[in-house]
Image 1: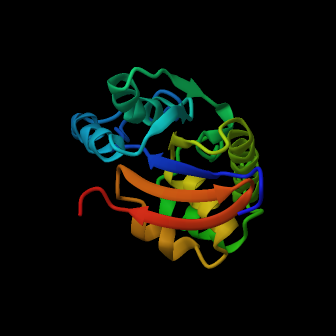
Image 2: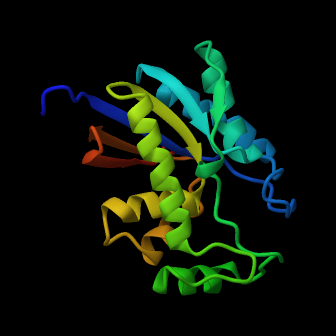
Length: 194
C-alpha cells in the first residue's frame, strides 16, 4: 500500500423492494416487505464499523439505509449523483427490452433520459468525491440497481446485461468494494437472503 493511502471500504446497498405501482421515480416508496427487509441491511452492516451513510435522494434508497443509520446515531447524507438513471418522460412497460438496448449500447437513451454512460460518469464522480472525503473509513451508500450496475461495470467490464438481469429482483442487495486512494482493490457481491 502506498504511504499516505489507507483502505477505504464502500458498502453499496441496493434498495429494498419498491412499490412499482408508484410510477414517480423520486417518491416511489418501499413495499411492506421492503420496509421489513431493511432489517437485513441493519443486521449486515452492524459490525462493519460504518462511519458515514450516504444515499441517493430517491425515497426507496434513502429509506433502506435510514434504519441502520439511526441505529448507530448517524444521519443520512443525500447525494443527487447517486440517484437512479432517468429513463425518459414516460413509464416503460417493456423495461427488459429497453435495458437490453442500453447495455448493448451504453450511449443509447430516450428523449429526456440518460444513457448508461452518463449514469456511470455521474456515479463514479460521486464515488471519487466520497473516496476523497472518507479516505480510510467504512461507508454505506444507498443506491439503485442500474446505478450500481454501472459502477460495477466501470471496474469489471465483463459485467453487463445478463448480470443485471440476474440481480434486478434481489432487493436489497449489497456490493462491497475496497479502495486504496482511487485504486480499486476488490469487490464482493452479497445476497442478504442467502
